[in-house]
Amino acid sequence: MSEKILAFLKEIGPAGLIDIILMSVLLYAVLSWFKKKRAALVLVGILTLGLVYLIAYQFRLQLTATLLQAFFAVLIIALIVIFQEELRSFFERLGAWSIKGQQGGSPPSPTEIEILTRTLLDFSRKKIGALLVICGKDPVARHLEGGVELNGKISESILMSIFDPHSQGHDGAVVIQRDQIALFGCHLPLSKNFEENREMGTRHAAALGLTERSDVLCIVVSEEQGTLSAAQKGQIFPIQNAEHLKRVLGNFYQEILPTPHQKSGLKFFRKNPGEKIAAVCISVLLWFVVVHGAKYSVRSFKIPVEYFQLAPQLMVKEVEPDEVVATFSGPRNAFHLLGERDIRLALKLLRTEEGTEVIELSKSDFTFPKDINLENIEPNRVKVTLGPRESKEGGKDQ
Image (tube, rainbow, N blue to C red; front, side):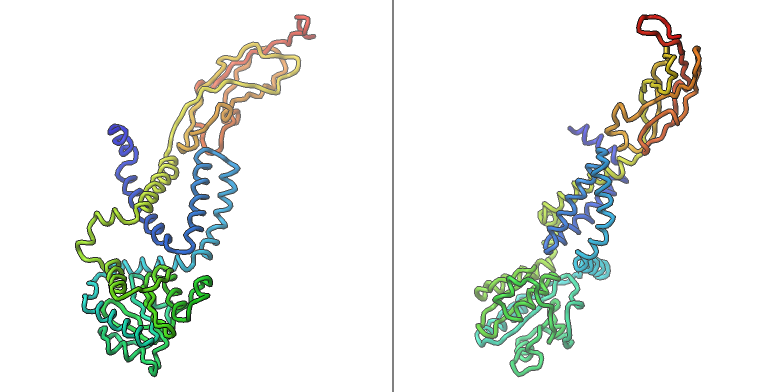
């Protein structure tokens, strides 16, 4: 087993291994990002068709490969339309990561979480409607409308002032970044999930709508019933009590700003194992089909000598040699399922008299797939002896 692994790694080589690792990281980022999106099933369908195409291409299933290739040419435009929101969010996060280094920092202290918990529970008791948006790693500015910049420390008095029913900004949302109240009076996009919206108010629909587009956590206080709800990853759920609210806030902050001991390699490998395995498997498959299969290869075949267009009064008495060795070059995957009848040598015999003819072989005498090239023929001459065709009675035709 170890010898096979070593042979496998030797075949890939250092450059191929780096290639697979980089592609696996990129695929993992895409798979894990789209996992939480509503269009994830569409992505799974496209990947399935892609796998079918690779298999068809590898095993020379020309009809399937040709049709899927034409389909994927149109699919590029369809992907931009279907995934326009997801692609924009993905590139925004990539840009934010490259500029800010994953937006590092320290999560809010227990005191700040305590302030948020105490304030929200106070709103609940007094039935004061409120909507808090706690930012994650995704940029959210393009999803917000209106709002007034504040950039102040989180405090109970400021939150009470903002959501006072007589305040101009009480109908909007408060946006919290780390331990700062960045904006207030913001308007959020409403959810398009009409099943969930049927029994929800505007604040709940706005909270759910923003979590469908980014990784924020939204806390909603109902003005009519005084209930607390939290929205995250396109899902909304009720908050049972103070401990539940603290747990939701604490878990969210730990997720977006993990402490140093939580950034260990072990946690990375435990997180999303299915996506990691899928990314590695797809990368290895792509490497073998695209890179390994495209590597230059040379193979030789013994090909029997065939002939056609022989004059009706003649017959072939002898062909010497009766087979030749033809050497072809091309990508490795072009040779995988090459059958005996895929390469043929057929001589055109135009001679109308008896005798021996030496025919010099050329590329035009061979029939072979267009993705390989004829490099050499050995021998490159064939001697054909023609004689009179014998009649059915055993004599010669006159």
